[in-house]
Length: 95
Picture (cartoon, rainbow, N blue to C red):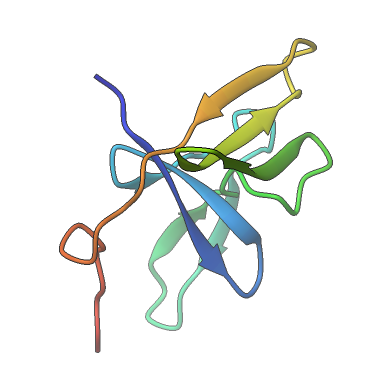
């Protein structure tokens, strides 16, 4: 079963995560970049609310609240119900 969550980012806003990994926009081309060490890297754009085809909604219900991520980039509306991410599931990398 696919688990959808979100995370916040300063550059892209709210990013959609699929099974704990950033969802990548299939409509943005991969951008080749070169690091300081000369290695070639591919930069991908995440599926996020910085795109006009993505929207993050919160609803207050009698039994609590519900969050959804709405995508319209395929020409049809796709509503993805978001699961609540617990603190232990959050992946934090400190350098």
